[in-house]
Length: 234
Image (cartoon, rainbow, N blue to C red; front, side):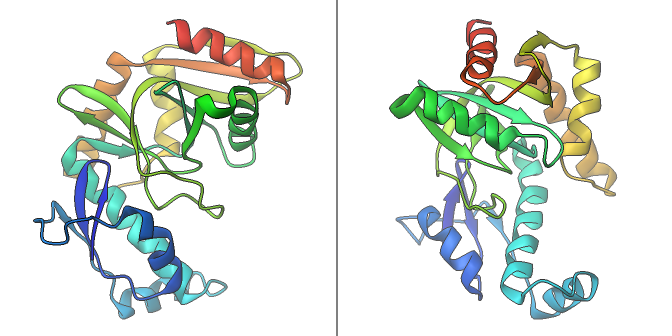
């Protein structure tokens, strides 16, 4: 089947329910278009993955592997994965990244509540940042963690924020050097030198054109106002 995501035609043939179901809203209307990316997950590869993670089902294993293959392949198209929650407000995208359990999804949920119809979740866990015609976009994908919160859209990227739990709501812009140190643990771990070079090239372009912030916040409406007021005006 041919799917359209991140502005690319992606061909793959999922066999199990989780990948089939989560990919449905990305189905290309024209199935005769030439694929930009072709992905293939064999039963043998699923077997090998389950040997390392015996607690998961074949359906989940296939879904995870397709996600890994896609995020590697999109490096050839100026795209990178950033483990984050991506939200659009007034057609501008904001990404919130942090270690698992810090509260990025919770913070985005507060944004959704505060902004109402002005806000759309792009991807709650694994959005793509992609450069297209020298413009930088946050993109939805069907690979979005356990909650399957994503939308098949591309939205101009306004800002990226590294979240920390805090007793007070404080946000500041951070340097490129500090941002790189925070982003690398939240993207692909790649052994291939050429692909790693592609990742760093895209990351450099993103950080040269998009402001990055660090937020210390609680779980409140004031946290939303603090982050949005800073990120939206710069």
